[in-house]
Figure 1 (cartoon, rainbow, N blue to C red):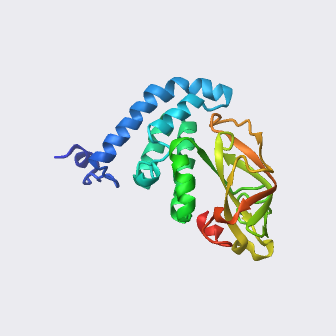
Figure 2: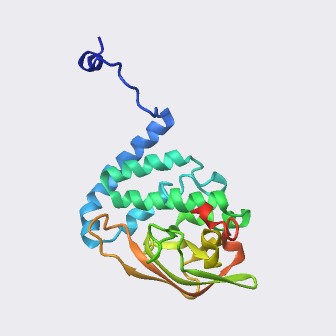
Length: 248
């Protein structure tokens, strides 16, 4: 008689998810990498509150920053689930490492793949797969739990929108070169005014501000963003104007 059945009187319950051979091999390879390359750096990164730049480059070389980016754009062309497996195995060793890969794949890459125009995908996905860290800027001082009570404004000016406001608690901000910034085109419209914009780090008027000195997950940067009349081309909108809540 099965030991579990003998003890509990019940049939053994199979796991909810059975990994395929490919998924299991991927999981094992990420676990080995995490043990051999990430674990030795965890203590130092936590004490310094800084993610090791060399380790970040290894993430890119191994394809961990572009797991679910289609192959045509230089990514691994794998699934969202594979990205989750990688995050799980990295987080087993260091939560900061898991967060870096999580935000890149499940928030930034996923949003651009789903909502970006063909031109936006061609412009940004190859960069995100090869050397550019992405960040996701939704929260504000008065828009945390109520994420759609945004005050960051986006004013239409010809072929651009001009963004002004501040964002708080933006993960990956210190390392990022590309940001998904949520702003409202009209506060009176509530969530129907929210629009998602792709903002490059070197756009005039954009700055990464204070880095939070956190109690935990310290190597993962969490920063304020400052937008002072940042001109963003209309082609950098993800999805439709006023439909940013779908992207979020």
